[in-house]
Length: 184
Image (cartoon, rainbow, N blue to C red; front, side, top):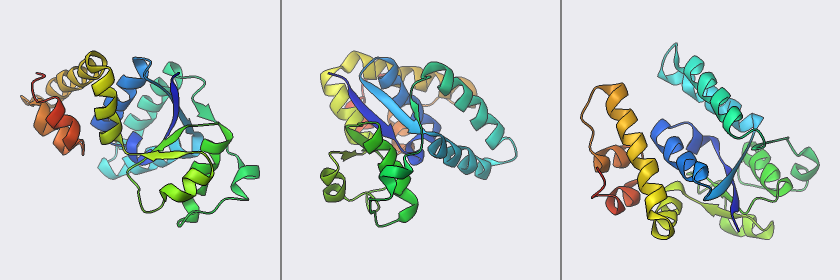
C-alpha cells in the first residue's frame, strides 16, 4: 500500500530536495499531498532569491498541479479548530493532513510538529533525508534515477560539474548523499 504524505512548504521550496522527493512520488513510492496555503508559502519564500524567484516558483507550481491534480487538498478549518501545535501558523498543515487521511507530514520543522501530538492524530512526522534513504533501501533504482535526473539538471542549469554527494549535502540530504555516493 502506497503511503499518503503531506509535504510541507520547507520541503517544497528547495529545488533539489523537492525534485528528489517528487521523483520518488513520480515513481509511485508515495502519494503527495499539499494545500494551496502550503503552495503559497513556497511561492512567497521564493521571492527571497530575487525578482524572478516567485515567477519561477509559480511556473514550477503549475507543473506540480498538472502532474498531481488531486494532490492539492482544501483547507480544513473544521479540523483545525480542535488541534494544537506549538506554532499556531502550522495547525493548517496538520489539519489538512488529518482531513486527507495522510500517513505522515514530511517536514524539516521538528520543533513545531511534535511526534506525540501528531501520533494522537494518527500522523507521523518524517524528514525528507531519512525517508528518502528508507525508500532507497526498498527501491534503490527509483531513488537513484530520481537523484541522477536532479544531478543532470543541476549540471545543465548551473554550468557546473556537480558531483552527487556535494549536491545532496548542500540540499540538506546528507544521509542520502552517503547512500548514493556511487551514483554519478
